[in-house]
Length: 388
Image (cartoon, rainbow, N blue to C red):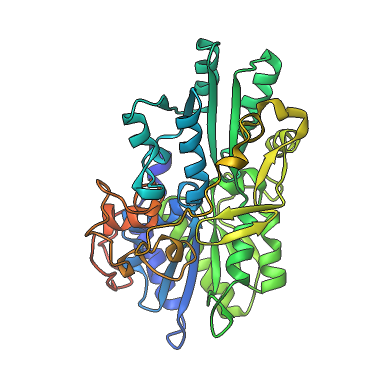
């Protein structure tokens, strides 16, 4: 644990906070989007927003894989497990996400359907081996971080000729979401006002820092890839402030101990072997986007649950979020959880109305777990209140 504790030292946090206070221009307001939900939780868990000057604001982005899965795709999985005698496997958070009519995979499990939580794709493979007479479907979600394990499972199933195993693929791509955030008009046909991005940590360990160059070169916004520890987030914020003050727009890598420019090329080759781009894919909050998600290549079509079970017939055109749920706007950076009239009232972790309250990376879950209903307060630069 000592290595991690080096990135949680109170004296260093106070020192960086002092540098930030000296670096900011009092005449301007800085708005930085932390794309990854892991950063959102770090900001609230360690009280980082409280250590920032009043004119430095974090904007929460769409970097929660559970949150961005649209209800139509969740309805599709629910209809599959109801209509077919399959074992449906997925990660724990996804089982509690509300679908249409507030049904979830967990309530379907309570109906007697065979829905199982797994910790890895290898668990799902083992279930298929243990149940050769039944179809086992792994409901795959996630950004570039969780895609390689799904690719490993598909290749292993092909090697073993495990014909009762298939994958319902919902893997999505980070750069496409950032591009959509930068391009989408939100007010007076202008894009969301942002001064820069805290680049995701785990995703960048796979894809590297190079894929974010378009943000700096085409949109003139700085990107700093940040680790998840409090000192990582604070130092990355200082690096963004300095870029803004100097009029620079570059991709910088604070997380050098893990992330390289080119990323994990072995993982990238594995993904490229198994998956290809989808023409269109729907994201919660961002709508349909071209080339923003992956599908299984024809060579592995025997393990594609969408083809195996003709799941296009299960898409519900009337699927939609609860009308009062602000999750779509929160994922676009337009609102904060406390702007949602359901937050903390009808919507709590025990009775979630939207995906952002369910996921361990959701913004609403972060507010509930660490921030509750309080608004951020401004701390002095040398504050010793850091929760690091």
